[in-house]
Amino acid sequence: MTSSIKPVKEIQINLSEEETMLSNELEEILCEFFYVLPEEGTQDFLDERFIYDLADEKEIERRIKQDQDWLSQGEPEVEELAKLEELATSYFESPTKVSYPKEEVQEYVTGYVQFLSGVEFTKNGDAVEKWKAIGSKVQVGTSKILDPEGLTVYLKLKGIELCKTTRIVFYGLPLSEIVGSRIYRKGERKKLTPLSSDYQNILLAIPDYEACSGMEKSIYDSIDSLIKEEVLYGTDLMIDRVALGHWEMTKARLEELKAEEEENRNIHKIQRIEKKVTQTKNEFDEKFKEARGFIDKLNKKEASFNDIEKESIELIKQVLWLAEKKGERIEDKITYFKLKSLYRKLKSDELLSNGGVNALKFIQNVNDGDLVEVHLLSLDELQQIMDVLWSGCLRINPMYKQTYFSLKERYQHLKRVEELKAA
Image 1: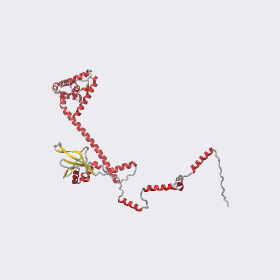
Image 2: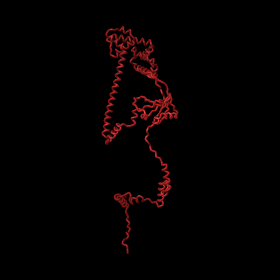
Image 3: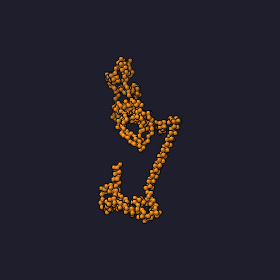
Image 4: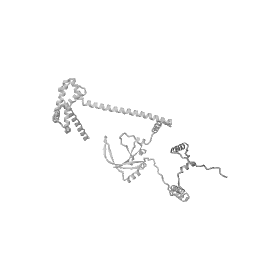
């Protein structure tokens, strides 16, 4: 019986170069539109993934063995049950300890050793001992403070022996559990309290209340931070009405306290200013009481120029200062100008008698246009020159006013240096 399938005759078609290029492009377009990638996990997918793996069976076995060796890493095989049991038993007898970070809690306090350095007296005449630290310190657990006998032995082992001239002061926030806490003013020293009547040389510093309270958030602070966070992101508060009411009342009270504190601060500030102004005015009135009374007598014709001529130069200076600077005028112009001339004459005589000749000569040299060296003058020389200029006896010509400013600047600089040395 003959087969009905006839072989297909191979037909060879010769295409030109241009036709071949067009054929290739058409094939690429068809593949792009009609080709579908195989799904992951199907046989076609696996065949396509490994279609280029040309390794033989020996290579595949070598790869499998290499993977098994890498997984076991020298451990016994499953078949070796006895050895596996031995390894498991030895491990659980001493398992590997895994450490993890723990929250650090301050459970210790620091003690500073102090020595008696002398005695000082207060304003009331009471004697107060002065203690000085030398930088030696020791840290102990808070629980050890409650065992003074054990603490004393521990300090002796550290080379610290307490006596009448030696003591130790402990500082730290955990002390609030033993001695409580208190509110301190700015710059106030910590208050010290003895551990007990039998151990007067072991002192505990009472911690600051704000520092202790800052370690834990209050209910108000917790709710306030929650409200700020939730409102910022627009989420539900999830706070019951009681807690929210507590927050509202506390917030309102804090605002009232803030306003009261600001008002009290302003009141105290005004009181200080008024007190200072009143004190200054009283001192001024007391200082110029005699000069003011003399001006009043001159205006009422109860005193004359001859009477004031017998007075001191300081009183005449005060009378002129009140008349020129404070508006307490002398009604008689002739008397005023007589007083002014008298003051200049007395001041000139005083300067000449106190060695002010050099100062007058210096000012005259400046007015004559001579070269002067201001930077070589001492503080005493400048003091005499400025006394002459400020007394009005002799002035520097306005043409040389820059020299006056140089003299004044030099005088103020040397005076400031002298004050710093004295301090």
